[in-house]
Image (cartoon, rainbow, N blue to C red; front, top):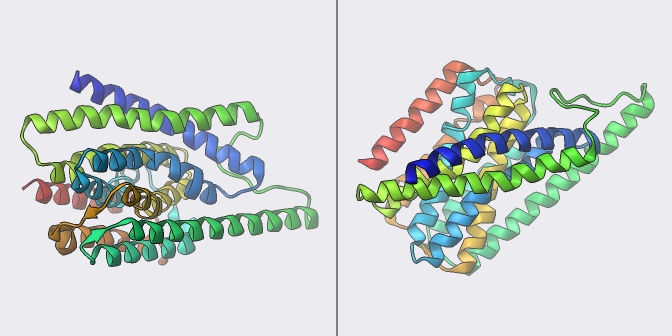
Length: 320
């Protein structure tokens, strides 16, 4: 049954990821919001739902190390695996999209999280700080969205009424279908991830793997599969803004939202190994995005292979 859960979970994740990307991109076209902003909010929150469910349940079950490992491992996987694998399938033209603002927010969230972890335990007051930072990020994203809509409206009035095109979107897709795609994606992603994680954790425990290692590797990988499925579909549709925006948004929500809520449920002790290794690997993986954010580089197959190889090496080191 565990292997059946893993296979079924993967199928649901792939189908739900496609539905969520389709719904999010068409939603952005309909309401005049850029696909990047939609991916930073709706898509990011939907694909981060598995991490939230796993982290809260882990703390309630008395395994806070699994919760912390899940978030840290997921953020590392999001950059190295979730961007690496799609780049192996098709080059993502990240140079055509400006993600500098959201990237700086992600790095600030990373620095804040590591700073709070330095106290040795994440408590309720740590959670309030993280949630306050998330609220500030959402307010900023809303302001950017409204400014973009105003600029689009002004440009349409000045020119010919032409609207900004979003590649792969269907202007004829009605609201019922858009909402249906979003609901199917947001419901299917956590369902598929839960099936996969349950099967994978049971298989891992059969071989005597510790909870911390499970959190950093198998659970993190399982809960990152929604991001991977969504990003693969975005890459196939040549929507690089959705792909990188999904990763950046998910990483911010993992650190600020998921750990913010989780620490309100119960304290999360920070194992010294996290401060000496895993948190810095997570931060280092985020730094690797600089060429694509600031230097105008496209995420080619060569870069994808490098990111994937780095993730494989990290998993091997964690397991050994």
